[in-house]
Length: 250
Image (cartoon, rainbow, N blue to C red; front, top):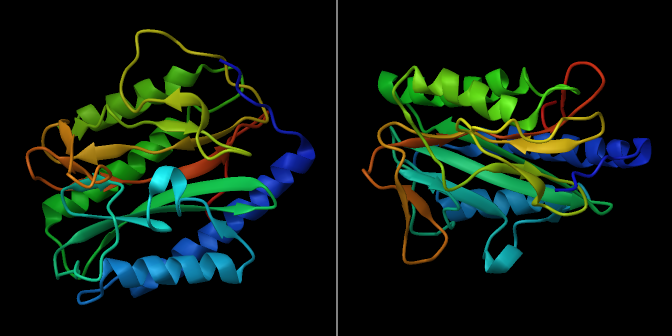
């Protein structure tokens, strides 16, 4: 497995791409409310990306028909936006998207509450987000890749939630999904050693109930098999000689 090490020029371009994406999420989050369709959110996200000079990297990626993945409630990832999917009070929605700027990709995901949600679902969202931050504590030069995976597993398992195993984090750069794969669950091996200049997407996908998932007939939407809610939180990060840098947060 060859994990690319970015040059200073490449790192700067990654930073620019990721800061643009962070602004997209800041604006998209403002329109999440009861009564809006997932189609409207997607179109707004695409408009924001293009207005900044970026290109949506999810649009037509392996045939995906939209710029933003809009996954509601039990949908884990890759939900397809629709004019007929109207958000309701008490829903949660995970938005996952990225962009290309000057040849460099960025990728992030956030789960949002739609109006007032139950305390149980709120905890799921908070634990999923915190799992990311627990994971990146291990994302330091000299540590091993699966130190990240094991830290996420140790934290999330304490809540009894299901950690999705079929989908994982990844490297990123001039391609959207690059080596290495980054599981969110415990590994027996240590994995490759981390080095400054690596850019990675760490993205816990956590189910309130069991870890089992299935694909819907659209061949994209992944759902929790037991129908319980799922949350997703992702950032693109940079490994440095010191603390990791989160590139997709303003």
